[in-house]
Length: 439
Image 1 (cartoon, one colour):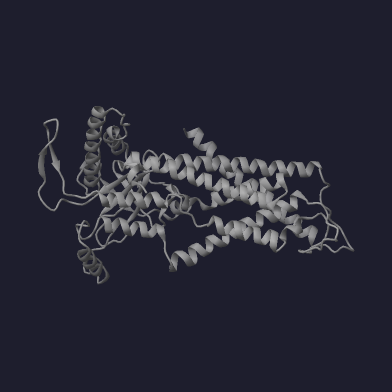
Image 2 (cartoon, helix red, strand yellow):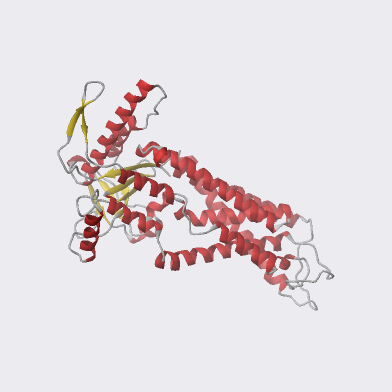
C-alpha cells in the first residue's frame, strides 16, 4: 500500500510539473513569436509536423494521463473513508422497555433519528461541492475563445487580429500556440471563479462548509472521519444547550442565548470555540474501533429472518460505537485518552506531524477546515488542472474548442455523478443511514 500511495502521489506531482512546463512553453511562444514585428522576424515556430511539435503533444498527453491517475486516486480515497455520526442527544425521559418478537427486552429510546438523517443528507450534498461552477466555466471559456476571438492568436503567422474577415488569409493552427491559449483561458477563468467564490461569495452570501459545522452544533451531532487507518478528522457538534430535539420556540431561545453570550462556547474544550480537529489515533484505539464496526459493516442479505437478525445486530453495533466515541471524547477511558494541541509552524507548512504519538491520541486544532479533504472542495486545484488538460487534449485532437468544452463538461458531470452515487453508498454503509433517507 505504501508503494501504491507513493506512485499515486508521484503521478499527481509529475503531472503538475509536466503541465507547468507545457504551459510555460506555450505562453513563451505566444509572447515571443506573436510579439515580433513582421518587418524583423527573428524567432520562428517549429515546423508543422516536426519532432518538436510531436514531442510537445506527447508531453501534454502524458500530463493528462498522470493527472487522470491522480484524480482516480482522490476518488478512491474519498469513497473509502470511514465516517460515523455521533449523536450526543440524551433521552428526556427514562427508557421504556418493550418485548420484541424474539422474547428479548430492548430499550425504546425517545431520541429522534431525524437529526442524524439531516446531517447525513447535508454531508451527502456537500460531497461534490466545488468553488468552480461548470456552467459559468463553459460559457466564459467559449465566450473568450470563440466570440472574443482569442483562438485566432494560435495561427502560425504574426497576425494578432482577433476578428479576421472572411476574405482574409488564415494561416494553419500551431498546436503549441493552441495549447498555450486554450490552457491559459480555461485555467484563468477557473482561478477567477475560485477567487470570487472564496473572497466574495463565501464571505457575503454563504459558506457551505462552515454552515455544515454550524448545523452539526444545532443538531447535537458530531462527525468522526477516518481518512486513513489512524488519521482523520473530527467535527465537534455537541450542543452547548444539552438538547437539540426541541420545539421551534426553544431553539430560537437557544440562539438568542448564544448571540448574547449567555452560554458556553461551542468548542470541544472549555472556553474554546474550535470545533474542527485533525485526529491522530493510537493503534489500540483503532483496533477497538474496528472491532465494534465489524458487525456494522456486514451486508444484510435479502432473507426476511436473517435480515431481521442482522439488522438488530447492526443496530446494537451502532449504539455501541456511538457510546464508545462519546465516552472517548468525554475522557472516560484513562488508557485511551487524548490531548488537544496546536501544530508547530513547520508542521502546518509541510502538512506533516513531527511529534511522537505516544500512548494517547492527539487532536490538532484545525482552523482551516481540513476535513474538506474528504470532499471535492479541498481538491479544486487538482480537479481544475485535470479539466484544463482534458480540454486541451481533446482540442489538440479535434481542433475544435466547442467540442473540447462539451467533452470536458460531460466528463466532469460523469465524475460528479460517480462521486455522488458511490459516496452515497459509502455514507449509508458507514453511518447506518439507509440510502432511502439520503435525498
